[in-house]
Length: 119
Length: 179
Image (cartoon, rainbow over all chains, first blue to last red; front, side, top):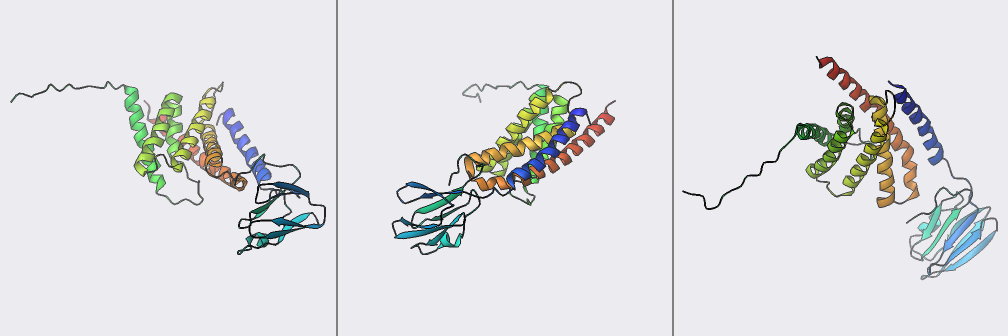
């Protein structure tokens, strides 16, 4: 092995733990919820307020509950209720959506790892 | 009977280099196809043994030959397997191009430069990184994909190391054979 080889091996040994550290860490607590409704309007709501939000959609009203720095779908007039089963969102980067009622919630906070996310 | 038209025969002059590239590419394609039959433990993870040929060619005949062999292998391999112009092909090509670029930079190093292990590791890491970026940009633009990156890079490093050891053994054999 040449000196350059050893440098490459060392680089690899440093890179791998760095990758695990960067991409396998939980992203930390979220502090803001971004809610998008049927018309594409975006609401930014801080998660430190305890409140219930009523968002109108094509099927009816979706109810979101904010408490203890997290947010969840409390009720939604859809059939599958996947949005409700998503449960509480509190980790930065998590999201839930009620597609039938066209309401989505994404939480963010701390240092965002990505500039944008496409769905 | 007289032929009605005169047939002209075009002879393409081939050089030693052309033949060398063709033989080595044929070898790489064979490995590439044999490997494509192996089941994969994880999507996107393959030993990449055809890279053994690329690295050996790089060390024996230089970067331009390695570029020919690697790109022809991806092209012809995909046509034979039936993945030409599919996402598999795009990813394969992206990986090949990024590893060739990194190998090209590697050859510029001063002094004794890189050996088989260094070249192979760099090529494997660059291959996976390039493939991953293209997969993220073109096919799966979802942040969840990044969760796979550490695992994929670990596998790339392992297989790169194994390929490097194979190239090292190969080079030693070739040197012993030389008069």
